[in-house]
Image (tube, rainbow, N blue to C red; front, side, top):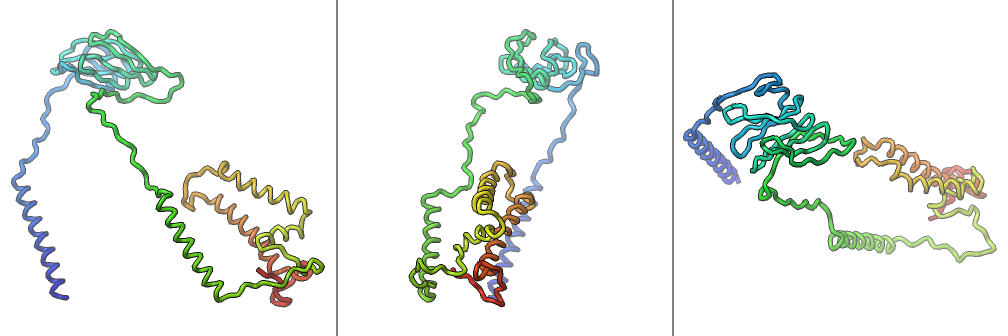
Length: 299
């Protein structure tokens, strides 16, 4: 066993040493990256030709011409690659994005007018669209993508379990386990069957099944109309309204404090009534102490 451990450790150390040697050798042969070199710049603040007022977008035309959109000046200026001024033309108010296609047409989007305009290189307006009143979107960027650059992406299927066969198989296995447990339990424990019912003899106390004991307990405090109809209807309508009142999508308990509190209160209310009706009601459905008078409850 110790030899195997030492052998594994030696193999790991050898592999790590080889990897380090190879990376060092590869790094030694690498050519250092050349730092970027400054070429030129032009322009200054102003509204004259060749000057800029809040330039917000830049695009390169098919003939290496530089188009600059100015937010506050509401115009586009055109330069050569060396910065020589070629011309300018007015565009939509407060342009936000600019792009130039292969034919030299200039596309400009407006951040305040919510429109897109198309101009020739000379500045002549070709087309314009958009401008939905009250739109909140601001076109900050604009780009032209060739058709061959667009790739269709299918939406990936999320994690889910199909009903057939996965879910049904799991439910079937769970049912078999539950059935086996019930068969084993019923084999060793006899069912508490009583004598045949006698219509002339009413049991005392006469209790409803345990799942209705909460309602029977309410009859001790309220009118039958209130205890049997009004309160159950209010509870059922409240359950049906919960999805419409509580629209919080979070499943974290810390984000659902109100919902958890209401459910806990309702659950404790029903459980308390059921426990009282089961163990603290005796002959004549009067209050008894189970440790003194006994338990008047049967499954």
